[in-house]
Image 1 (tube, rainbow, N blue to C red):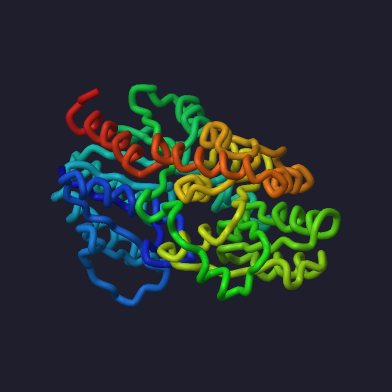
Image 2 (tube, rainbow, N blue to C red):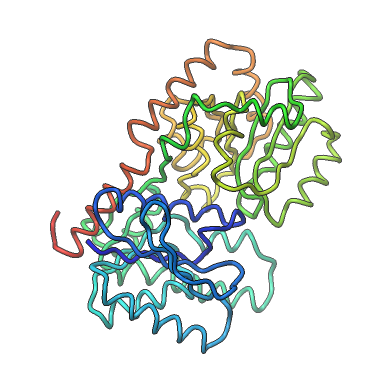
Length: 391
């Protein structure tokens, strides 16, 4: 099968790490004998040309600069690629990628698959400041996100909540497929050493790690508050690390200073995805904290499956898809409650047998379900449904 995949962001930038989903899925399809061309939109346009990646994917850059001439040019280029494709797959509802994919599929009479992995309009609401332009963009984005699932041949949903939203839009259940997030089981493993990371940062104490972008809708402040509570009220011999970057970095560092976490909390900044396994390996406990709202109810958090595959003891907020993902392979805490998060971390620190059990269960959970091979199989069923009407 010839698969044209489209993502609105930069698959090569550590500033947009969420693109790993489409890259891993494309890699799985190539491993199974399919041909994949992956259109992406570089964060910084330098006139890049197509290139074949080491895993056999052909990566094709499109400009994401603003302007009607660029937008029309992208539609024409996408239309040309669509001739080759047996199916067109796009992720996220952002207009600069979604509309060229939609138009090309329609003009070429090609089946179209939408990979719905986040409720983007809700993320936009918590990531922007009020204003006239903000409201206009919100209306446009919301319209796209509500219309796209209804006009595509098939839709994959990363969470049960997104599946429910899809059904509420009137999409027939037979056209909706589960596509939870996964981990690369060879890239993330329990036997990877984190000693180099610990040596580089002179970490001798138990290390508690948070992985994720420092943007709106991420709630890393809960991790910082829990760190302060643990240090101030329980024990001094703990180190904390935040792996990731984003526009909230300065604000969060200032928050850590006010809570007197200097020397106890490390901010690494954004890192290449290839480096992430050794940072997770350096940790004793890994954390995924959230509030309970419409954003988090829809999430299938990538950080959790990468913790699972790495065989780590996990403390996570009991919200949305998280309890289904862990199923006993981690400690669940009250969403939005830093004290509950601190208690969960402390529980593992005080019980080495519990930590060992959680580590074993974590890897098993990833091997059984939360890996890219399983997700790719689910999406391939959607392709066959739309392209060949095979259930």
